Length: 330
Ligand code: UT7
Image 1 (cartoon, rainbow, N blue to C red):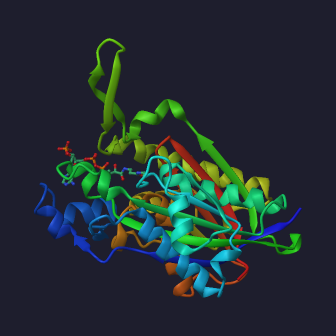
Image 2 (cartoon, rainbow, N blue to C red; image 1 turned 60 degrees about the vertical axis):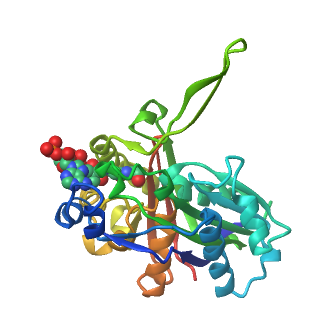
């Protein structure tokens, strides 16, 4: 079996910043409420006409490729984790064309805020079984396009962004993806969703209906409780399968949903809060992008160094949640 490792990371966010004060002009809220309940101070929002997740995802991908001087033509597979494509048939093929990765197979993976973890694990399988050598994994979302800007429970939380990693084959002894643990609880799908609802009949005789997607709807309290109980359990299970313990973790890199969730998970695992990687104050919850966006920043700041053990967990709609544990090699 081949080994797999992350060779490069890149990220991209839109230029427009919207801070809590500005949000307070749209809905009844305050900087104080948002900052203390979530840790978020501002978020980036994609506004350009016809700009979509494709532009952000492509930019993040090109940055990751440039860092290791890799020609896009060498990419074998592109997995785009997104829940906000600009085409229901998928956006990954547009990213493939935009970056000139003409030899790559490309597909979307939809798993909301767990999407990046699931995409890393999927890419690892293709590498470890010898199918592909160079895989571009992107987590990108523009949930601002799906927000009800009059709903203060959700509109304060989300921001847009993209993060990309290049995963490559390596020798088994240099394998960096130590283990993973994934879960789904479909009975709870209604806790967080963007539902498709049929709202009018287009042909009465044949009973043909047409509808549209609604806005993001979330039962915040329930999702919060789910996250702080299931994520520590997933990390613990994953560590057990590879004979490690929470003490071995150098960095805890969780989906950037809420600062209080990050701290509660660290506390439950008896991990010092100093080991938490967090940048949500600047970007809010960027869904599938949040983990690679925070990873890129942590690497730029020389936080994560060679041989560090990084526990990465995603959680969100589905409900889905999961962990991948990485020994950093670059
Ligand atoms: O990315 C996928 C995963 N998503 C998550 O992990 C999100 C998980 N949930 C959360 O992070 C938190 O539940 C929220 C940040 C969404 C909400 O925080 P909370 O501490 O659970 O607040 P709450 O929903 O219990 O609301 C408390 C109060 C309510 O007022 P009453 O009923 O106590 O009078 C809300 O109406 O705060 C009110 N409230 C607000 N007040 C000012 C709710 N949203 C706001 C707001 N500004 N934006």
